Image 1 (cartoon, rainbow, N blue to C red):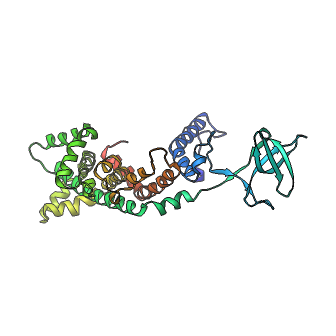
Image 2: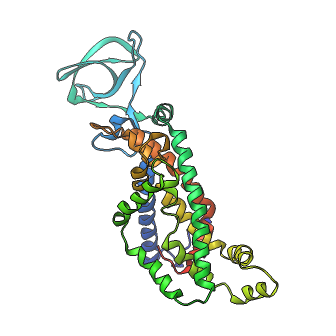
Length: 348
């Protein structure tokens, strides 16, 4: 691993292409993971720390110290004294433009210092209450259960429906097959906002408003999934299917025991896409679900947005928690992505 990371083109020293390559890779890492690192670190900041200017990357808070004779901890400051030296003092109180400071080790003498001569001492401080407090006040487990049910069920239905459509379009010869495939692909160009009202009217007539099935079913069949799986199934030799038919296998058995196992890399890619789509979906669940006991996590996070202020420290902490499941899914299935995407010709 170390030899791979330090590999370079120049034999005697770094070549200009080595410098450009590492600069490009470093920029890519910062662009890709910088926002994630900022999100995780900011989720441990206090609400006041999030709006500080200039902003700090690390979660810090004013350092305090216990001083004999004072009930509460006092904030620490680095103070520039009259002789030019610097001392770390604790502030007792501030009166106008003057601060009354004491030495924490010898609090008997009170020094009066202009406020412009002191600088606040800050220390790392992780506000774990950002995670524990919402879990206590917020129906996180209910929303998590709803999100898991929606994501898992919708992904399984999506895989079955799309793979059956892809199998028919890839391995059966019938009149109008290409027209059907083009019609399915053409739905990719229809924006979601155009079909929101018709789909909502259908869901209302069926009685799936405030029902998780109203979130699961409408998006189960996706043209992207049909296209991805069809392109992969075209690479499966027809001779295998013909051999299975000669052995007496039914069409369902060919689909279930021959085609699906061979299409596992493409199915894994579609599963990752489906999990990301369903887990992060916000607009459609917001429209269909109006009762809080049916909210998914993404809709439930909206509860931290009040009329006058937004509790960003809770929003960021809960956002980190919602990212964990999808990160785990991606980690387990990421080895299929390269194979699946390369075989289906899907980019991005």
